[in-house]
Image (cartoon, rainbow, N blue to C red; front, top):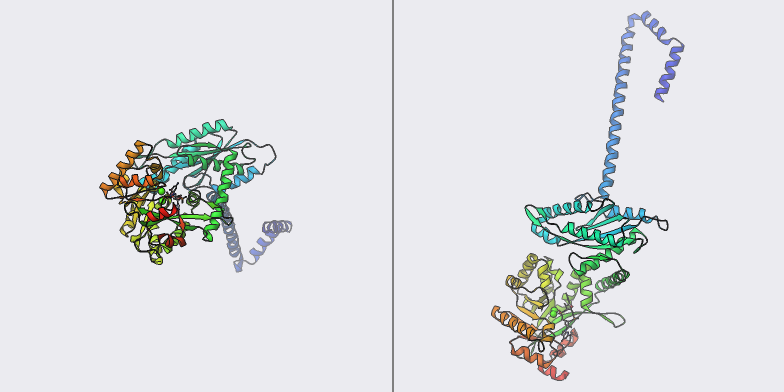
Length: 506
Ligand code: C2E
Ligand code: CA
Ligand code: CA
């Protein structure tokens, strides 16, 4: 508008010869020095013009910088800062836009869900910085697999590869290639570190109608691959979908049960084989549904572990077990099972001790049962946690001994008080001479180390006698009694010995 007005003014001035008139007037009124004033205004105008151009250019620059910043904020929100790969947010948008083609012919896609094996160990070995370096290298290797693909990093050690036009067979080849590339050693701070990977595969269309459900299918396949072990590849099948849906249903139910404190503790007697007296009880979780049916702890404990509910559930169960045990005679021990995943929790000891204090059960009356897999998963943390517990006066026993990766190295690192010989050995003891030799040797070795032994799953009198004869200290099994509700424990104890109880049961 200003420029328009200036031009219009200029035209009028030209039309009326305004400049000539002005010059004439200035000459006539020479004594007022108006020409100098006019010159000053002209120079000021020129300066203003230059200033305006410079300001305009600055604004231009600011606008460009702002647009750039806006673009980089969007970029950062959709990418993983460490590996520069697109993240879950990007994947959701991408899946939405690809899935919008529903019904129309769309390009076939293959989804490969990738999860690293043993990444946590590497992190422990080379620290987080080293772990980050490894992740960057793995991102680079994945990005190189095929040209027609997008690689996403979905979280810690989870990646997703989406590629165009690959069928199930070539997808398996691709997955093998991914596992091989990831498994190549990688130097980090001068140490050759190695991780593995599991891959879940789904193809769209085929396993799913669109990319969004394709991702869920690949996840289900990955879940199965991981359960089968390291370096495994699994292609999605309907069955997997059903299993996963069932698991999700169970997880929901479990969440409800934990929230409303519905899971109970039952107690199975632990007996001294020499005196046949009940010396303690192992607490076993019992989930009884409203219709009277039950879900086995073998089923729901793993779900609680995988869904992160185990800490809350275990605290609830431990409190119930301690409340019951605090009412028992002071020489009766409580055995409580600790899940493998709990041993990596550095606050486990603190929480257990707090509950012991609140319920009034002395630590010396508590024995924790842990399995070898819990120790192996993270030896350092597990050793620390167990040493703290041991120092607090709590006893530690190895559960299901003989079924895991038993190693003398582990036995020597942790101060165990007891070994519970797995029931599979008890069952085959009479018929399998090799098993018999192993059990006899384990009992002799434990004796030498001053570690007590308990045989699990004693169902028959002959087993009781055999184990007593080879020097096993304790026993547990249906012969002595099944797990019972807390209210039945006092009646069960009722001054009777286990032998009398066996006689009564018979
Ligand atoms: P576990 O610690 O090895 O517990 C012993 C299992 O053997 C119990 O099964 C018990 O009922 C069963 N059993 C005892 N005596 C006999 C016998 O003479 N014959 C036979 N055939 N079986 C016998 P349950 O109660 O089904 O528990 C299964 C597993 O679930 C337990 O194995 C334990 O690993 C886990 N679990 C149970 N309660 C808890 C808990 O509160 N916390 C955690 N973390 N795990 C638990
Ligand atoms: Ca146990
Ligand atoms: Ca056991």
